[in-house]
Length: 373
Image 1 (tube, rainbow, N blue to C red):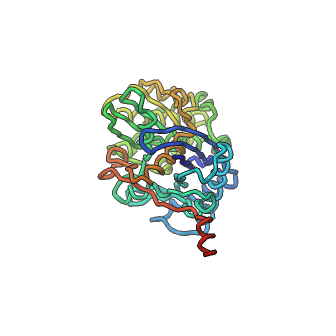
Image 2 (tube, rainbow, N blue to C red):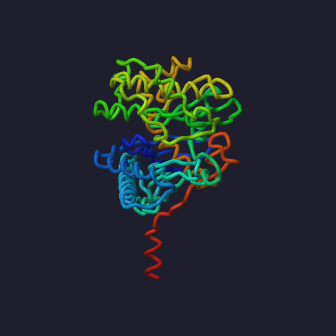
Image 3 (cartoon, helix red, strand yellow):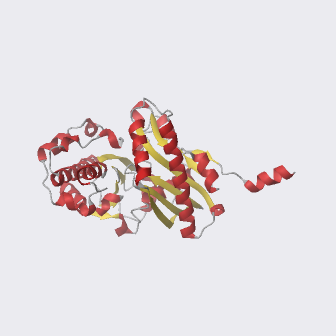
């Protein structure tokens, strides 16, 4: 069946939309992908909503959050339209949309995770059934609610020698370990691009460190790096997850722009190395997806600290920009079939668990027949 996945990450750079054909199990075929960047105005609105949400003791209401959710839903509907046009596929041919929404706060330690996005409104706008709230049931059952894509990583890596690890370098990093017998272990590694992006934007006005050039020109401050690694997150045994804002760029203040970029990039690499050391068996390969795979300085530092050569996911035939969005399409199909999407080894949930809230698209034809009866 055909399914669409939508992902708006913590980097707030835009929306990824992917169309796949899948049975939600071992069959996956990527069909189309589009990336829709946010405008500066939209990005500012979402950033302000995130800052506000972090002040809440639990998810609540506020006019800014309502405006941000409406913005998200509207822009995601536009991304679906663009994707269908590119693929030349009619909305009625699509079984479901996996709608991640925008994470504005992630607090599994308090029993909640908060993603903005109106699934019912998206279903009405696109004419396609929507599965949203894919993290909620896991957190309610005592899980971390993240990462959710290990089961999709396993489907993608089905033909690869095992054990293999898939590293996603988005705003936050997460790793999936797939054992020789198919066992899954997954957890957040720590900040990935998030801190580097924030530093570069503050110091230079750029959105990110293009090609890792700024970090490559700087020197790592080992004292700052050691201090950042002395964080209680690294003492926790996996599965574990974090909010992008659990770490800040504050320790790097006072460094030059280049030295700060180098130090924060090295921090990402050190986080990955710490995660690799926690795996039961060293992976034969480390496949890297997400925006960080485009940063050669980051990949070089990861190689130096792990002794593994990171393989950009494009090198194994995956679209590294699309993997997360594809994964949420895959999860939507699994949700509709009642299959588990999270597992004890990936989120810490007590047992394999399905999840997601279903929002049916309005059936216009049926409504017309009823009215005319």
